[in-house]
Amino acid sequence: MEDEKIIDLFFQRDTDAINQLEAKHGKSIYRTAHNILGSAQDAEECANDTYLAAWNTIPPQSPAPLVSYVCRIARNLAIGRFHANTAKKRNTYYDAALDELEDSIPSLETVETEYDAKELSKSISDFLGTLSYDERFMFMRRYWYADSVTAIGQMMGLSAHKVSVKLFRVRERLERQLSKEGMLA
Amino acid sequence: MKRELISQALSDIDDKYISESAKYRPAKSGGNAKIVRRIVVLAAVVALLMALGATAYAKGWLGLSPLVVNTQMPLSENSGEHDIITLSQPQAVPEDLPEVNELAEKSKQAWQEFQDRKNQLPEDEEYDRLYDLIINPTLTKYDSTYIENGDGTVTINYCCLPDDFDWKDAIGLDEPPLEVLESRVVSEEDYQRFWELYNQHTNYECEYDFNYWLESDDEKALLEDVAAKYGLNLRKSSTVVWSSETTGQSGSSYYTNAELTDMTNSFCKGNIFYSTPDGFDKLYWYDEGTFGVSFYLPTDTPDRLIGYYGYNSVYTTLSTGTEVISGSTMDTYQSRTHVCPDGTEVEVLYDDTDAYFYVYLDDSFFAGHISVTSHNFDVDFTLDRTLSAEEIDNALDSINYSLI
Image 1 (spheres, helix red, strand yellow):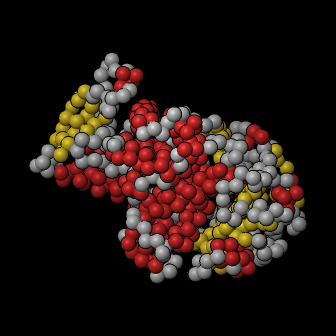
Image 2 (cartoon, chains in turn red, purple):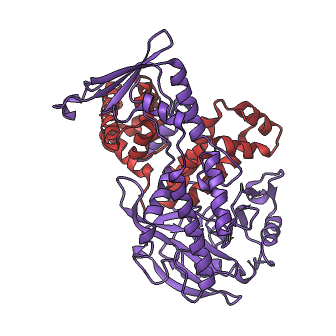
Image 3 (cartoon, rainbow over the protein chains, first blue to last red):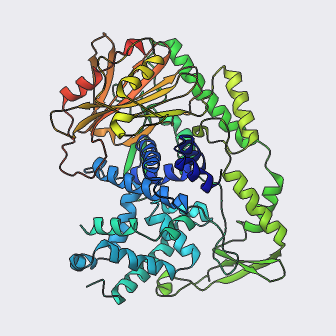
């Protein structure tokens, strides 16, 4: 079913909207949650919470594209649950992805109080616009969807090592970009 | 703090980048590598679990093996190794339950046979031909580029890195220096058809539960054949319902806690709840008797709830064993037996924050997870997540297992 028709079902308060949403984007939602949470049980619950959140927010929202809207919800819910679940256990793809980014922009810490997340987010979005599609795809899959480098390599037909090296270079460019914008000390 | 800042900044990234990376799509010109394979992370996990299945009982802790699928499986490249716990298939049935063991083994054998025979299914020749034509992993030593020629054809350059290439030299370059090993020109028809078939292979849907990871009608028919051979049922799609009281929502999928209690009981031999739960996360079920229920029990602390997730696997249903799994390091877990009010002995595996339990019933294996949670899963670092023995026992005692 097309996204517009699914949204129509939400507007008509037809609960089949949730079934159709699950059929169309369920795998993406589940995968996003699973990558962050590392647990099928938690991911399944998070996916269901995502359907509920979509039900609660559409209408008034009429998101386009729908996939990014629901994946964003899934990611936010998963991160909330991730913090709750893993206060003492750090073991998911999301941990590894955050570690990489944290290590690649070491001096961010010294100025973080001067720049809020939205400014950093805008800088990262601007930076993404300067990348090739493949570089962007790798960056987003790794740091937004929290895929493992192996999984990204499998999606793109590259070795994990190759993905790691390319991501390393992208992170270096990100650091330079942030430094140029005065985001880093 | 920096970690949270980065995490929040990533959450706010422009929508267009999220949607464009939901699925890998090749650029039509001047792009980089375009080799794509059918991969789903959990499918890989399933395959790995199958491959490692023989080691399922390696550790042999007292009481642990029935839930531990395999040991020491890395969850990510940079993480340590973790034990995989299945809540949906008994892994090591006691010798004094030969009939249960026979059914559990039958399910495992059926899934293994399905995997083996799936590997022998005839390949999609057109897809394979186009895969070799367009992707050609043999030729692609490092990368490939696709260039539209303007006349409908596409030139593919299969590239490698120079022999003396050192990644240190590439730092700061936009692209590493590539050497074209071979080029080929493909028709627009072949190029488009390939991606059409690729999408067909990767987006297959049918009436059976997605946990079987089917990708084609042939695989679906094979699964049905194997299930029939072993006399096992297959799960179709599930129905999920939520609590109107917990969520504040109304509609055809929302029921009061009392109604959800009754609905759960309708899959059982009687009322399994000693009292109506404080709230439900969800209830879901399949038409052959498998169901999952997630509910909350109150504690003395507001918004600190005990979450109870139970999954009932019918012995006569073909299970992959990976429908509901958790990852944890079981070295620190202890095991004990708890006798519930109805006299049922439940095996409990627990550490400071999590408890897993299981019980062999006449027709099914009921397993679950107990942990501290909150209604909205808000980030709350102050929430005490330590589970006391009393809280575990109270949660276990909330169900009458003999009526499942």
